[in-house]
Length: 121
Image 1 (cartoon, rainbow, N blue to C red):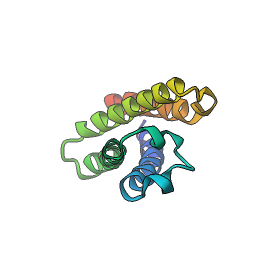
Image 2: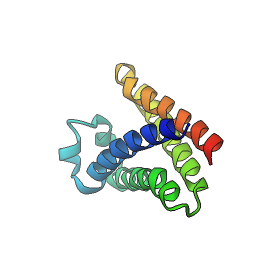
Image 3: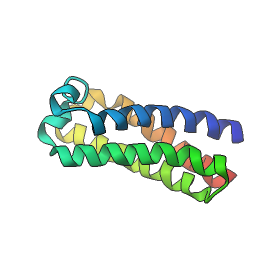
Image 4: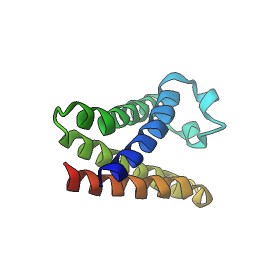
């Protein structure tokens, strides 16, 4: 269980650290080729999503590593799972059903991480 948690947590943290960092630091024009949904989303909301992803990435790793409030890892995994539910909703409402594969994969990985954190912590 510990190994499975750490594998998923590190993979998710790397992904969300990268994606969140891009959302926080890049302009709409720079994000658009990779994230078409930013054209109809206010940039303050895009930035907020980026900061939440960065916080979630840190929350997956730091609490269990430090032993300080490890239950926060469970909250981080749950929060990132909710982010993907929102992503799926956005893509479906935009008629982009063909691109939700990554969202579904991240949703499943997040849900499994929630379960592993609940069992382990």
